[in-house]
Amino acid sequence: MELQTTIYLFVGLSFALYLGIAFWARAGSTSEFYVAGGGVHPITNGMATAADWMSAASFISMAGLISNMGYGGAVFLMGWTGGYVLLAMLLAPYLRKFGKFTVPEFIGDRFYSKTARNIAVLCLLVASLTYIIGQMTGVGVTFARFLGVTSEQGIYIGMAIVFAYAVFGGMKGITYTQVAQYCVLISAYLVPAFFISLNLTGNPFPQLGLGSDFIGTDVSLLSKLDQVVTDLGFNQYTTTAAGSKLNMFVYTVSLMIGTAGLPHVIVRFFTVPKVADARASAGWALVFIALLYTTAPAVGAMAKFNLHATVNTAAVTGGDLYAADASLKYEARPDWMKRWEKTGLLKFEDKNGDGRIQYYNSATKNEAVKAKADAAGWKGNELSVNADIIVLANPEIALLPNWVIALVAAGGLAAALSTAAGLLLAISSAVSHDLIKGAINPNISEKGELMAGKIAMAAAIFVAGWLGLNPPGFAAGTVALAFGIAASTIFPALMMGIFSKTISDKGASAGMLAGLAVTLFYVFAHKGIFFIKGTAYLDLIGGANAFFTITPEAFGTVGAIVNFAVAYLVSKMSAPVPQHIQELVESVRVPKGAGSAAAGH
View 1 (cartoon, one colour):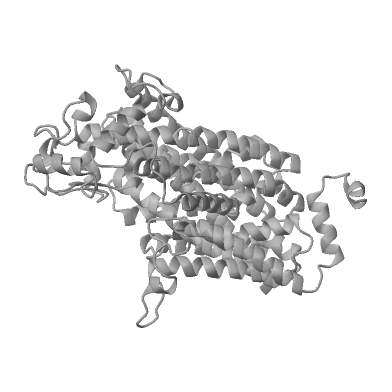
View 2 (cartoon, helix red, strand yellow):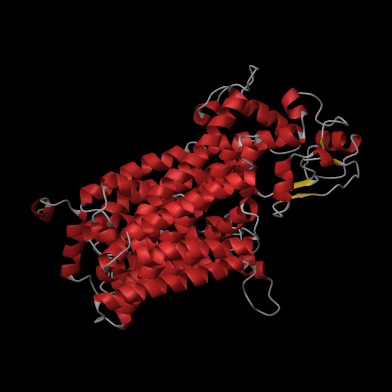
Protein backbone atom coordinates (compact mmCIF):
# COMPACT_ATOMS: atom_id res chain seq x y z
CA MET A 1 0.00 0.00 0.00
CA GLU A 2 1.44 3.40 -0.97
CA LEU A 3 2.40 5.86 1.74
CA GLN A 4 -0.37 8.44 1.28
CA THR A 5 -3.09 5.79 1.31
CA THR A 6 -1.62 4.26 4.47
CA ILE A 7 -1.59 7.65 6.18
CA TYR A 8 -5.23 8.31 5.23
CA LEU A 9 -6.15 4.89 6.64
CA PHE A 10 -4.37 5.33 9.99
CA VAL A 11 -5.53 8.91 10.56
CA GLY A 12 -9.09 8.15 9.43
CA LEU A 13 -9.40 5.14 11.73
CA SER A 14 -8.05 7.10 14.70
CA PHE A 15 -10.53 9.93 14.10
CA ALA A 16 -13.39 7.45 13.77
CA LEU A 17 -12.34 5.92 17.11
CA TYR A 18 -12.30 9.31 18.87
CA LEU A 19 -15.71 10.30 17.54
CA GLY A 20 -17.22 6.92 18.39
CA ILE A 21 -15.98 7.13 21.97
CA ALA A 22 -17.23 10.70 22.34
CA PHE A 23 -20.71 9.71 21.16
CA TRP A 24 -20.77 6.78 23.59
CA ALA A 25 -19.54 8.89 26.54
CA ARG A 26 -21.38 12.17 25.89
CA ALA A 27 -22.11 14.34 28.94
CA GLY A 28 -25.66 14.72 30.23
CA SER A 29 -25.06 16.87 33.34
CA THR A 30 -22.76 19.64 34.54
CA SER A 31 -20.90 17.13 36.73
CA GLU A 32 -20.23 14.91 33.70
CA PHE A 33 -19.34 17.95 31.58
CA TYR A 34 -16.85 19.43 34.07
CA VAL A 35 -15.40 16.39 35.92
CA ALA A 36 -16.78 13.29 34.13
CA GLY A 37 -19.17 12.62 37.03
CA GLY A 38 -16.24 12.14 39.45
CA GLY A 39 -16.18 8.38 38.88
CA VAL A 40 -13.15 7.76 36.63
CA HIS A 41 -10.89 4.82 37.58
CA PRO A 42 -7.37 5.88 38.68
CA ILE A 43 -5.61 3.92 35.90
CA THR A 44 -7.97 5.35 33.29
CA ASN A 45 -7.49 8.82 34.72
CA GLY A 46 -3.72 8.33 34.78
CA MET A 47 -3.70 7.47 31.09
CA ALA A 48 -6.01 10.39 30.23
CA THR A 49 -3.83 12.72 32.33
CA ALA A 50 -0.75 11.57 30.45
CA ALA A 51 -2.43 12.35 27.12
CA ASP A 52 -3.57 15.73 28.44
CA TRP A 53 -0.06 16.42 29.71
CA MET A 54 1.88 15.34 26.64
CA SER A 55 0.88 17.99 24.18
CA ALA A 56 2.18 18.74 20.71
CA ALA A 57 5.05 20.44 22.56
CA SER A 58 6.01 17.10 24.16
CA PHE A 59 5.35 14.88 21.15
CA ILE A 60 6.46 17.09 18.28
CA SER A 61 8.73 19.78 19.70
CA MET A 62 10.61 18.44 22.74
CA ALA A 63 12.83 15.91 20.96
CA GLY A 64 13.38 18.49 18.20
CA LEU A 65 14.50 21.07 20.75
CA ILE A 66 16.80 18.52 22.40
CA SER A 67 18.13 17.58 18.96
CA ASN A 68 18.95 21.22 18.17
CA MET A 69 20.14 22.27 21.61
CA GLY A 70 21.83 19.09 22.83
CA TYR A 71 22.37 18.95 26.60
CA GLY A 72 20.74 22.38 27.00
CA GLY A 73 17.44 20.92 25.80
CA ALA A 74 17.29 19.00 29.07
CA VAL A 75 15.58 22.04 30.61
CA PHE A 76 12.36 20.95 28.90
CA LEU A 77 12.76 17.35 30.00
CA MET A 78 13.47 18.30 33.61
CA GLY A 79 11.02 21.18 33.74
CA TRP A 80 7.97 19.41 32.34
CA THR A 81 8.61 16.16 34.22
CA GLY A 82 9.44 17.98 37.46
CA GLY A 83 6.32 20.06 37.07
CA TYR A 84 4.20 16.96 36.99
CA VAL A 85 5.85 15.68 40.18
CA LEU A 86 5.15 19.03 41.88
CA LEU A 87 1.53 18.84 40.80
CA ALA A 88 1.12 15.25 41.93
CA MET A 89 2.77 15.78 45.32
CA LEU A 90 1.83 19.32 46.34
CA LEU A 91 -1.42 20.21 44.60
CA ALA A 92 -3.55 17.41 43.19
CA PRO A 93 -4.57 15.52 46.38
CA TYR A 94 -5.45 18.70 48.27
CA LEU A 95 -7.44 20.20 45.43
CA ARG A 96 -9.32 16.90 45.04
CA LYS A 97 -10.10 16.93 48.75
CA PHE A 98 -11.49 20.45 48.35
CA GLY A 99 -13.92 18.92 45.88
CA LYS A 100 -14.90 21.73 43.50
CA PHE A 101 -14.97 21.84 39.70
CA THR A 102 -12.32 24.42 38.78
CA VAL A 103 -9.11 26.09 39.90
CA PRO A 104 -10.63 29.63 40.00
CA GLU A 105 -13.41 28.24 42.20
CA PHE A 106 -10.84 27.00 44.71
CA ILE A 107 -9.03 30.36 44.65
CA GLY A 108 -12.32 32.26 45.06
CA ASP A 109 -13.48 30.16 48.02
CA ARG A 110 -10.08 29.90 49.74
CA PHE A 111 -9.46 33.63 49.49
CA TYR A 112 -13.14 34.47 50.14
CA SER A 113 -13.17 36.87 47.22
CA LYS A 114 -14.93 37.13 43.88
CA THR A 115 -12.16 39.50 42.82
CA ALA A 116 -9.50 36.83 43.40
CA ARG A 117 -11.65 34.31 41.50
CA ASN A 118 -12.06 36.68 38.55
CA ILE A 119 -8.32 37.44 38.46
CA ALA A 120 -7.66 33.68 38.43
CA VAL A 121 -10.10 33.35 35.51
CA LEU A 122 -8.23 36.09 33.64
CA CYS A 123 -4.85 34.41 34.22
CA LEU A 124 -6.28 31.01 33.24
CA LEU A 125 -7.72 32.35 30.00
CA VAL A 126 -4.52 34.16 28.98
CA ALA A 127 -2.31 31.14 29.79
CA SER A 128 -4.63 28.59 28.17
CA LEU A 129 -5.25 30.60 25.00
CA THR A 130 -1.53 31.24 24.59
CA TYR A 131 -0.77 27.56 25.14
CA ILE A 132 -3.42 26.40 22.70
CA ILE A 133 -1.77 28.35 19.86
CA GLY A 134 1.03 25.77 19.92
CA GLN A 135 -1.46 22.90 19.76
CA MET A 136 -3.32 24.34 16.78
CA THR A 137 -0.01 25.08 15.05
CA GLY A 138 1.00 21.44 15.64
CA VAL A 139 -2.28 20.27 14.11
CA GLY A 140 -1.68 22.48 11.08
CA VAL A 141 1.93 21.28 10.59
CA THR A 142 0.96 17.61 10.87
CA PHE A 143 -2.00 17.87 8.52
CA ALA A 144 0.00 19.92 6.03
CA ARG A 145 2.69 17.28 5.74
CA PHE A 146 0.73 14.06 5.97
CA LEU A 147 -2.67 14.81 4.43
CA GLY A 148 -1.53 17.01 1.58
CA VAL A 149 -3.53 20.06 2.68
CA THR A 150 -2.39 23.54 3.68
CA SER A 151 -1.68 24.23 7.35
CA GLU A 152 -4.73 26.53 7.41
CA GLN A 153 -6.97 23.75 6.11
CA GLY A 154 -5.40 21.42 8.69
CA ILE A 155 -6.38 23.77 11.51
CA TYR A 156 -9.96 23.91 10.21
CA ILE A 157 -10.14 20.10 10.17
CA GLY A 158 -8.68 19.93 13.68
CA MET A 159 -11.25 22.45 14.93
CA ALA A 160 -14.06 20.35 13.50
CA ILE A 161 -12.79 17.12 15.11
CA VAL A 162 -12.34 18.72 18.55
CA PHE A 163 -15.75 20.38 18.26
CA ALA A 164 -17.38 17.03 17.54
CA TYR A 165 -16.12 15.25 20.64
CA ALA A 166 -15.42 18.06 23.14
CA VAL A 167 -18.58 20.14 22.92
CA PHE A 168 -20.94 17.20 23.26
CA GLY A 169 -18.77 14.93 25.37
CA GLY A 170 -17.40 17.44 27.87
CA MET A 171 -14.93 16.02 30.39
CA LYS A 172 -16.59 12.60 30.22
CA GLY A 173 -16.15 12.31 26.47
CA ILE A 174 -12.70 13.92 26.56
CA THR A 175 -11.49 11.52 29.28
CA TYR A 176 -12.19 8.32 27.37
CA THR A 177 -11.12 9.88 24.08
CA GLN A 178 -7.79 10.82 25.69
CA VAL A 179 -7.26 7.21 26.76
CA ALA A 180 -7.47 6.20 23.11
CA GLN A 181 -5.28 9.13 22.09
CA TYR A 182 -2.63 8.12 24.62
CA CYS A 183 -2.49 4.61 23.17
CA VAL A 184 -2.08 6.06 19.69
CA LEU A 185 0.53 8.68 20.56
CA ILE A 186 2.71 6.47 22.75
CA SER A 187 2.73 3.73 20.08
CA ALA A 188 3.61 6.32 17.46
CA TYR A 189 6.50 7.57 19.59
CA LEU A 190 7.97 4.27 20.75
CA VAL A 191 7.70 2.09 17.64
CA PRO A 192 9.98 4.21 15.39
CA ALA A 193 12.31 4.81 18.36
CA PHE A 194 12.72 1.04 18.77
CA PHE A 195 13.47 0.60 15.05
CA ILE A 196 15.97 3.46 14.90
CA SER A 197 17.79 2.43 18.08
CA LEU A 198 18.13 -1.10 16.72
CA ASN A 199 19.46 0.20 13.39
CA LEU A 200 22.07 2.49 14.96
CA THR A 201 23.19 0.56 18.04
CA GLY A 202 21.80 -2.98 17.80
CA ASN A 203 19.85 -2.31 21.03
CA PRO A 204 16.06 -2.13 20.54
CA PHE A 205 15.50 -0.04 23.68
CA PRO A 206 16.27 3.63 22.89
CA GLN A 207 16.87 4.51 26.56
CA LEU A 208 19.74 2.00 26.56
CA GLY A 209 20.71 2.55 22.93
CA LEU A 210 21.53 6.18 23.70
CA GLY A 211 24.48 5.03 25.80
CA SER A 212 25.44 2.09 23.59
CA ASP A 213 28.17 1.83 20.96
CA PHE A 214 27.47 2.78 17.38
CA ILE A 215 26.81 -0.47 15.55
CA GLY A 216 29.94 -2.18 14.25
CA THR A 217 32.32 0.02 16.29
CA ASP A 218 33.59 0.41 19.84
CA VAL A 219 32.67 4.12 19.87
CA SER A 220 29.52 5.20 21.69
CA LEU A 221 26.71 6.80 19.69
CA LEU A 222 26.97 10.04 21.68
CA SER A 223 30.75 10.21 21.20
CA LYS A 224 30.34 9.73 17.46
CA LEU A 225 27.62 12.40 17.36
CA ASP A 226 29.84 14.79 19.34
CA GLN A 227 32.66 14.23 16.87
CA VAL A 228 30.47 14.85 13.83
CA VAL A 229 28.80 18.05 15.10
CA THR A 230 32.01 19.61 16.44
CA ASP A 231 33.84 18.83 13.18
CA LEU A 232 31.06 20.72 11.40
CA GLY A 233 31.35 23.73 13.71
CA PHE A 234 28.41 23.06 16.02
CA ASN A 235 28.70 23.02 19.80
CA GLN A 236 29.43 19.69 21.43
CA TYR A 237 26.10 17.90 21.75
CA THR A 238 26.58 16.48 25.24
CA THR A 239 27.78 19.65 27.02
CA THR A 240 26.00 22.64 25.49
CA ALA A 241 24.00 24.59 28.11
CA ALA A 242 20.92 26.79 27.64
CA GLY A 243 22.55 30.14 28.41
CA SER A 244 24.13 30.83 31.79
CA LYS A 245 23.88 28.37 34.66
CA LEU A 246 21.52 30.75 36.46
CA ASN A 247 19.28 31.00 33.39
CA MET A 248 19.22 27.24 32.96
CA PHE A 249 18.21 26.86 36.62
CA VAL A 250 15.42 29.47 36.57
CA TYR A 251 14.26 28.24 33.15
CA THR A 252 13.83 24.74 34.59
CA VAL A 253 12.02 26.09 37.66
CA SER A 254 9.76 28.25 35.49
CA LEU A 255 8.76 25.25 33.39
CA MET A 256 8.21 23.18 36.52
CA ILE A 257 5.96 25.57 38.43
CA GLY A 258 4.31 26.77 35.23
CA THR A 259 3.43 23.22 34.29
CA ALA A 260 2.12 22.52 37.79
CA GLY A 261 -0.04 25.64 37.50
CA LEU A 262 -1.68 24.84 34.16
CA PRO A 263 -5.34 24.23 35.08
CA HIS A 264 -6.29 21.85 32.27
CA VAL A 265 -4.24 19.10 33.97
CA ILE A 266 -5.16 20.04 37.54
CA VAL A 267 -8.85 19.53 36.76
CA ARG A 268 -8.14 15.92 35.79
CA PHE A 269 -7.68 15.10 39.47
CA PHE A 270 -11.25 16.23 40.19
CA THR A 271 -12.58 13.35 38.08
CA VAL A 272 -11.75 10.49 40.48
CA PRO A 273 -14.00 9.34 43.37
CA LYS A 274 -11.60 9.77 46.34
CA VAL A 275 -8.44 11.59 47.43
CA ALA A 276 -6.60 8.25 47.49
CA ASP A 277 -7.62 7.75 43.86
CA ALA A 278 -6.15 11.17 43.00
CA ARG A 279 -2.81 10.03 44.41
CA ALA A 280 -3.03 6.69 42.63
CA SER A 281 -3.92 8.26 39.29
CA ALA A 282 -0.98 10.67 39.72
CA GLY A 283 1.34 7.66 40.11
CA TRP A 284 -0.09 5.90 37.08
CA ALA A 285 0.15 9.06 35.01
CA LEU A 286 3.83 9.38 35.91
CA VAL A 287 4.43 5.83 34.63
CA PHE A 288 2.64 6.59 31.35
CA ILE A 289 4.44 9.92 30.95
CA ALA A 290 7.83 8.35 31.68
CA LEU A 291 7.49 6.06 28.66
CA LEU A 292 7.73 9.07 26.35
CA TYR A 293 9.96 11.34 28.42
CA THR A 294 12.70 8.75 28.93
CA THR A 295 12.64 8.06 25.18
CA ALA A 296 12.81 11.69 24.00
CA PRO A 297 16.57 12.25 24.58
CA ALA A 298 17.36 9.17 22.49
CA VAL A 299 14.97 10.26 19.73
CA GLY A 300 16.57 13.72 19.64
CA ALA A 301 20.16 12.44 19.50
CA MET A 302 19.46 9.67 16.97
CA ALA A 303 17.49 12.03 14.73
CA LYS A 304 20.39 14.50 14.83
CA PHE A 305 22.84 11.80 13.79
CA ASN A 306 20.56 10.43 11.05
CA LEU A 307 20.06 13.92 9.62
CA HIS A 308 23.80 14.52 9.42
CA ALA A 309 24.37 11.03 8.00
CA THR A 310 21.77 11.70 5.30
CA VAL A 311 23.33 15.00 4.21
CA ASN A 312 26.97 13.99 4.71
CA THR A 313 27.75 10.29 4.24
CA ALA A 314 31.19 10.74 5.83
CA ALA A 315 29.40 11.07 9.19
CA VAL A 316 28.90 7.29 9.08
CA THR A 317 32.07 6.17 7.31
CA GLY A 318 34.39 8.41 9.31
CA GLY A 319 35.84 9.96 6.15
CA ASP A 320 36.60 13.60 5.38
CA LEU A 321 33.44 15.65 6.07
CA TYR A 322 34.73 18.36 3.72
CA ALA A 323 35.59 16.14 0.76
CA ALA A 324 34.22 17.28 -2.59
CA ASP A 325 31.90 14.27 -2.88
CA ALA A 326 30.93 13.99 0.83
CA SER A 327 27.86 16.22 0.66
CA LEU A 328 24.55 14.92 -0.69
CA LYS A 329 23.64 15.91 -4.25
CA TYR A 330 20.49 18.03 -4.21
CA GLU A 331 19.01 16.18 -7.18
CA ALA A 332 19.60 12.88 -5.34
CA ARG A 333 17.97 14.02 -2.10
CA PRO A 334 15.61 11.43 -0.59
CA ASP A 335 11.84 11.62 -0.97
CA TRP A 336 11.32 12.68 2.64
CA MET A 337 13.24 15.89 1.97
CA LYS A 338 11.11 16.63 -1.07
CA ARG A 339 7.93 16.09 0.95
CA TRP A 340 9.02 18.33 3.82
CA GLU A 341 10.27 21.06 1.47
CA LYS A 342 6.66 21.52 0.37
CA THR A 343 5.69 22.48 3.93
CA GLY A 344 8.33 25.23 4.13
CA LEU A 345 9.80 23.71 7.29
CA LEU A 346 12.87 22.41 5.44
CA LYS A 347 14.66 24.75 3.04
CA PHE A 348 17.73 24.51 0.78
CA GLU A 349 19.72 27.34 -0.81
CA ASP A 350 22.65 26.45 -3.07
CA LYS A 351 25.03 29.25 -2.07
CA ASN A 352 28.14 27.95 -3.87
CA GLY A 353 26.37 26.56 -6.96
CA ASP A 354 27.79 23.04 -6.70
CA GLY A 355 24.42 21.27 -6.62
CA ARG A 356 25.21 19.69 -3.25
CA ILE A 357 23.81 20.30 0.24
CA GLN A 358 26.25 21.68 2.79
CA TYR A 359 24.99 21.46 6.39
CA TYR A 360 27.35 23.03 8.90
CA ASN A 361 27.63 25.97 11.29
CA SER A 362 28.87 28.76 9.08
CA ALA A 363 28.76 31.16 12.07
CA THR A 364 31.25 29.11 14.08
CA LYS A 365 34.19 30.79 15.77
CA ASN A 366 36.32 27.68 15.24
CA GLU A 367 39.04 28.82 12.85
CA ALA A 368 39.92 25.24 11.84
CA VAL A 369 36.35 24.60 10.74
CA LYS A 370 36.26 27.87 8.82
CA ALA A 371 39.51 27.00 7.07
CA LYS A 372 38.24 23.56 6.01
CA ALA A 373 34.94 25.01 4.74
CA ASP A 374 36.77 27.72 2.76
CA ALA A 375 39.15 25.16 1.28
CA ALA A 376 36.20 23.02 0.20
CA GLY A 377 34.60 26.02 -1.52
CA TRP A 378 31.64 26.26 0.86
CA LYS A 379 29.93 29.65 1.02
CA GLY A 380 27.71 29.13 4.07
CA ASN A 381 25.19 26.71 5.53
CA GLU A 382 22.64 25.71 2.89
CA LEU A 383 20.09 23.66 4.85
CA SER A 384 17.48 25.00 7.27
CA VAL A 385 15.54 22.43 9.32
CA ASN A 386 12.70 23.47 11.65
CA ALA A 387 12.95 21.67 15.02
CA ASP A 388 9.25 20.78 14.84
CA ILE A 389 9.78 18.29 12.02
CA ILE A 390 12.38 16.13 13.81
CA VAL A 391 9.96 13.64 15.39
CA LEU A 392 7.50 13.64 12.51
CA ALA A 393 10.24 13.17 9.91
CA ASN A 394 12.36 10.78 11.99
CA PRO A 395 10.90 7.52 10.58
CA GLU A 396 11.18 8.92 7.05
CA ILE A 397 14.80 9.93 7.60
CA ALA A 398 15.53 6.41 8.89
CA LEU A 399 13.67 4.87 5.88
CA LEU A 400 11.22 2.96 8.06
CA PRO A 401 8.12 1.21 6.63
CA ASN A 402 5.14 3.26 5.46
CA TRP A 403 2.91 2.02 8.28
CA VAL A 404 5.34 3.45 10.86
CA ILE A 405 5.27 6.84 9.12
CA ALA A 406 1.46 6.72 9.09
CA LEU A 407 1.39 5.78 12.78
CA VAL A 408 3.55 8.81 13.62
CA ALA A 409 1.14 11.05 11.70
CA ALA A 410 -1.78 9.73 13.76
CA GLY A 411 0.27 10.11 16.96
CA GLY A 412 1.19 13.73 16.30
CA LEU A 413 -2.44 14.61 15.75
CA ALA A 414 -3.51 12.67 18.86
CA ALA A 415 -1.01 14.61 21.00
CA ALA A 416 -2.13 18.00 19.74
CA LEU A 417 -5.86 17.23 19.83
CA SER A 418 -5.82 15.67 23.32
CA THR A 419 -4.21 18.72 24.93
CA ALA A 420 -6.30 21.14 22.87
CA ALA A 421 -9.45 19.44 24.17
CA GLY A 422 -8.24 19.69 27.78
CA LEU A 423 -7.36 23.36 27.39
CA LEU A 424 -10.68 24.12 25.75
CA LEU A 425 -12.55 22.45 28.60
CA ALA A 426 -10.58 24.52 31.14
CA ILE A 427 -11.48 27.68 29.20
CA SER A 428 -15.13 26.63 28.92
CA SER A 429 -15.36 25.84 32.65
CA ALA A 430 -13.80 29.17 33.57
CA VAL A 431 -16.33 31.06 31.45
CA SER A 432 -19.50 29.11 32.23
CA HIS A 433 -18.88 28.04 35.84
CA ASP A 434 -16.65 30.80 37.22
CA LEU A 435 -17.80 33.86 35.27
CA ILE A 436 -21.43 33.18 34.34
CA LYS A 437 -22.50 31.13 37.37
CA GLY A 438 -19.96 32.54 39.82
CA ALA A 439 -20.24 36.24 39.01
CA ILE A 440 -22.93 37.11 36.47
CA ASN A 441 -25.90 34.79 37.14
CA PRO A 442 -25.52 32.72 40.34
CA ASN A 443 -29.10 31.38 40.01
CA ILE A 444 -28.64 29.83 36.58
CA SER A 445 -30.13 26.33 36.30
CA GLU A 446 -27.98 23.23 35.77
CA LYS A 447 -29.42 22.87 32.27
CA GLY A 448 -28.65 26.50 31.53
CA GLU A 449 -25.11 26.18 32.88
CA LEU A 450 -24.52 23.05 30.78
CA MET A 451 -25.68 24.91 27.67
CA ALA A 452 -23.49 27.89 28.60
CA GLY A 453 -20.54 25.52 28.96
CA LYS A 454 -21.10 24.06 25.50
CA ILE A 455 -21.50 27.49 23.92
CA ALA A 456 -18.33 28.68 25.69
CA MET A 457 -16.52 25.58 24.41
CA ALA A 458 -17.64 26.28 20.84
CA ALA A 459 -16.56 29.92 21.14
CA ALA A 460 -13.20 28.86 22.60
CA ILE A 461 -12.62 26.49 19.65
CA PHE A 462 -13.33 29.36 17.26
CA VAL A 463 -10.93 31.70 19.09
CA ALA A 464 -8.26 28.97 19.33
CA GLY A 465 -8.56 28.29 15.61
CA TRP A 466 -8.31 31.98 14.79
CA LEU A 467 -5.19 32.32 16.96
CA GLY A 468 -3.71 29.25 15.27
CA LEU A 469 -4.34 30.83 11.88
CA ASN A 470 -3.14 34.29 12.99
CA PRO A 471 -0.65 33.74 15.83
CA PRO A 472 0.30 36.97 17.59
CA GLY A 473 3.94 37.94 17.25
CA PHE A 474 4.74 37.47 20.92
CA ALA A 475 3.42 33.89 21.01
CA ALA A 476 4.16 32.45 17.60
CA GLY A 477 6.32 29.35 17.75
CA THR A 478 6.49 29.06 21.53
CA VAL A 479 4.33 28.18 24.51
CA ALA A 480 6.87 29.58 26.97
CA LEU A 481 4.64 32.58 27.68
CA ALA A 482 1.83 30.26 28.81
CA PHE A 483 4.15 28.57 31.31
CA GLY A 484 5.45 31.93 32.49
CA ILE A 485 1.94 33.22 33.16
CA ALA A 486 0.87 30.05 34.98
CA ALA A 487 4.13 30.07 36.97
CA SER A 488 3.82 33.69 38.05
CA THR A 489 0.08 33.71 38.84
CA ILE A 490 -1.79 30.45 39.37
CA PHE A 491 0.88 28.25 40.97
CA PRO A 492 1.79 30.68 43.80
CA ALA A 493 -1.90 31.30 44.54
CA LEU A 494 -2.59 27.58 44.81
CA MET A 495 0.48 26.94 46.98
CA MET A 496 -0.36 29.78 49.37
CA GLY A 497 -4.01 28.76 49.38
CA ILE A 498 -3.17 25.23 50.49
CA PHE A 499 -0.16 25.70 52.75
CA SER A 500 -0.71 29.09 54.39
CA LYS A 501 -3.56 30.22 56.63
CA THR A 502 -2.37 33.83 56.77
CA ILE A 503 -2.52 34.95 53.12
CA SER A 504 -5.55 37.21 52.76
CA ASP A 505 -7.90 37.94 49.87
CA LYS A 506 -6.18 41.23 49.09
CA GLY A 507 -2.75 39.61 49.33
CA ALA A 508 -3.64 36.84 46.88
CA SER A 509 -5.21 39.27 44.40
CA ALA A 510 -2.30 41.71 44.57
CA GLY A 511 0.21 38.86 44.24
CA MET A 512 -1.40 37.42 41.10
CA LEU A 513 -1.64 40.84 39.45
CA ALA A 514 1.96 41.71 40.34
CA GLY A 515 3.29 38.38 39.05
CA LEU A 516 1.32 38.73 35.83
CA ALA A 517 2.42 42.34 35.30
CA VAL A 518 6.18 41.85 35.72
CA THR A 519 6.20 38.70 33.59
CA LEU A 520 4.24 40.25 30.73
CA PHE A 521 6.34 43.43 30.92
CA TYR A 522 9.64 41.55 30.63
CA VAL A 523 8.41 39.23 27.88
CA PHE A 524 6.69 41.92 25.84
CA ALA A 525 9.70 44.24 26.08
CA HIS A 526 11.75 41.52 24.38
CA LYS A 527 9.09 40.90 21.77
CA GLY A 528 8.44 44.56 20.99
CA ILE A 529 4.80 44.76 22.13
CA PHE A 530 4.96 48.29 23.54
CA PHE A 531 3.56 51.18 21.56
CA ILE A 532 5.59 54.01 23.09
CA LYS A 533 6.68 56.52 20.49
CA GLY A 534 10.41 57.07 20.36
CA THR A 535 11.24 54.43 22.94
CA ALA A 536 13.35 51.37 22.13
CA TYR A 537 11.60 48.34 23.54
CA LEU A 538 14.59 46.77 25.25
CA ASP A 539 15.66 50.12 26.70
CA LEU A 540 12.71 49.76 29.04
CA ILE A 541 14.47 46.87 30.81
CA GLY A 542 18.09 47.76 30.15
CA GLY A 543 18.70 45.52 27.14
CA ALA A 544 18.19 41.90 26.15
CA ASN A 545 18.23 39.46 29.09
CA ALA A 546 19.25 42.39 31.28
CA PHE A 547 17.92 40.92 34.52
CA PHE A 548 20.85 38.70 35.60
CA THR A 549 21.07 37.18 32.06
CA ILE A 550 17.60 35.63 32.44
CA THR A 551 15.80 35.08 29.13
CA PRO A 552 12.11 35.99 28.78
CA GLU A 553 11.15 32.30 28.48
CA ALA A 554 12.58 31.72 31.96
CA PHE A 555 11.14 34.80 33.64
CA GLY A 556 8.13 33.04 35.13
CA THR A 557 10.30 32.10 38.13
CA VAL A 558 10.97 35.78 38.88
CA GLY A 559 7.26 36.54 38.45
CA ALA A 560 6.44 33.80 40.96
CA ILE A 561 8.89 35.23 43.50
CA VAL A 562 7.27 38.66 43.06
CA ASN A 563 3.83 37.06 43.52
CA PHE A 564 4.83 35.37 46.78
CA ALA A 565 6.51 38.52 48.13
CA VAL A 566 3.66 40.90 47.26
CA ALA A 567 1.03 38.51 48.61
CA TYR A 568 2.91 38.19 51.91
CA LEU A 569 3.48 41.94 52.35
CA VAL A 570 -0.08 42.93 51.43
CA SER A 571 -1.50 40.24 53.72
CA LYS A 572 0.60 41.64 56.59
CA MET A 573 -1.07 45.02 56.06
CA SER A 574 -4.59 43.57 55.57
CA ALA A 575 -7.24 42.35 57.98
CA PRO A 576 -6.57 38.83 59.35
CA VAL A 577 -7.94 35.83 57.47
CA PRO A 578 -11.37 34.86 58.90
CA GLN A 579 -11.36 31.91 61.29
CA HIS A 580 -13.65 29.76 59.13
CA ILE A 581 -11.24 30.15 56.20
CA GLN A 582 -8.33 29.07 58.39
CA GLU A 583 -10.36 26.02 59.37
CA LEU A 584 -11.06 25.34 55.67
CA VAL A 585 -7.32 25.38 54.93
CA GLU A 586 -6.71 23.04 57.85
CA SER A 587 -9.38 20.61 56.64
CA VAL A 588 -7.98 20.56 53.10
CA ARG A 589 -4.37 20.11 54.17
CA VAL A 590 -4.60 17.71 57.11
CA PRO A 591 -5.55 14.04 56.54
CA LYS A 592 -8.93 12.90 57.83
CA GLY A 593 -8.80 11.98 61.50
CA ALA A 594 -5.74 14.12 62.22
CA GLY A 595 -7.63 17.31 63.01
CA SER A 596 -7.57 16.91 66.77
CA ALA A 597 -3.85 16.23 66.80
CA ALA A 598 -3.19 19.25 64.59
CA ALA A 599 -5.34 21.44 66.81
CA GLY A 600 -3.15 20.65 69.78
CA HIS A 601 -0.04 22.26 68.27
